[in-house]
Image 1 (cartoon, helix red, strand yellow):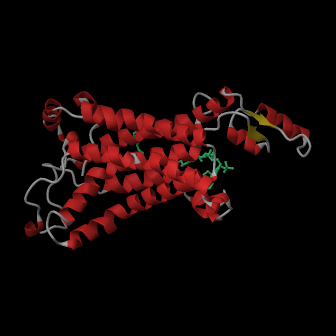
Image 2 (image 1 turned 90 degrees about the vertical axis):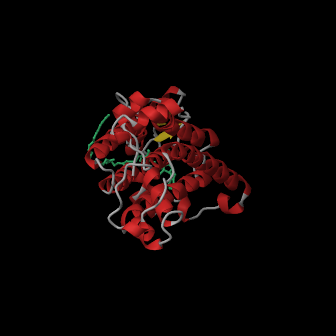
Image 3 (image 1 turned 180 degrees about the vertical axis):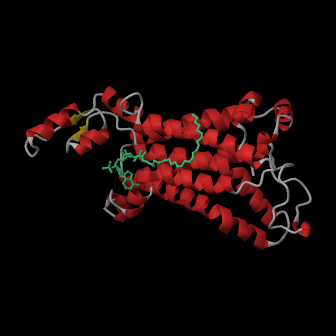
Length: 302
Ligand SMILES: CCCCC/C=C\C/C=C\C/C=C\C/C=C\CCCC(=O)SCCNC(=O)CCNC(=O)[C@H](O)C(C)(C)COP(=O)(O)O
Ligand SMILES: Nc1ncnc2c1ncn2[C@@H]1O[C@H](COP(=O)(O)O)[C@@H](OP(=O)(O)O)[C@H]1O
């Protein structure tokens, strides 16, 4: 947790680390009489809330996996147990695109006094999250980390000689990524197959929570504890936050479906654990505790 010293230095080191406590000018949607009289929750409170929110994801994996063992519903096929369900194909399969789009809508609407600076720091944090996603799922100096984990634990692409033409079977035999294996009609078989869905959905959700929480909390505060007028809150939610809430809700549901219908326990848990890595270093450790890191990467803000 931040010490007082850290907080002091945080509040004196430039606009990028400004918290909603003192920084934001009044929202254009709010009249003077609707302005809040005291401070909304501080950066330290955001940090506590963020850590609590991060527990949603292991809880979802545990609950979904238990449900798949205990309930007959979890053991039978459903729309969501189909890989080609529309939410999987149109959203999760290009999930980083949707996460990026929601993030861009969020930063386009920042009301920080130095919004340009706050946006450029936010884009650097997005770059780091994107880099983590690329290394785990797309490319790591060749096959991505999740495919290297698979082959490193004894997995391989097994061709189906009985039904495949020999040229494709040879291609499958040589495939070192799950995408190449699938493309050649082989079976990605035998190793630890870290769940790309558990990774991506958790990683993307934690990124979005960390980036948007100060603004979400500030909007709620304005609409409830602050001025007792629901319309600014509604305007904020429907004007700015609906996309973020929609993506967070869909990612949570799809993680639950992955937990109920796909993969083994260790594969889902490893996907979740790897998703904590970049988020944990940047948002749970460096930004709250290290003033130098706040200079480099800024702090999510309103
Ligand atoms: C390191 C510092 C860099 C700093 C960079 C700073 C600034 C950047 C500046 C500007 C950016 C501006 C705009 C960007 C706009 C759009 C970018 C969109 C980025 C995308 O993400 S496009 C790619 C879409 N693809 C996906 O989302 C694929 C997601 N799917 C998967 O990863 C996998 O399918 C899976 C892991 C979910 C499941 O795998 P399988 O089981 O199916 O194998
Ligand atoms: N919530 C979900 N809905 C539909 N399909 C899912 C899913 N979670 C995982 N899958 C599918 O299960 C397979 C393994 O997923 P992952 O390793 O990413 O967790 C992938 O199949 P395909 O690769 O054949 O599409 C993926 O699409």
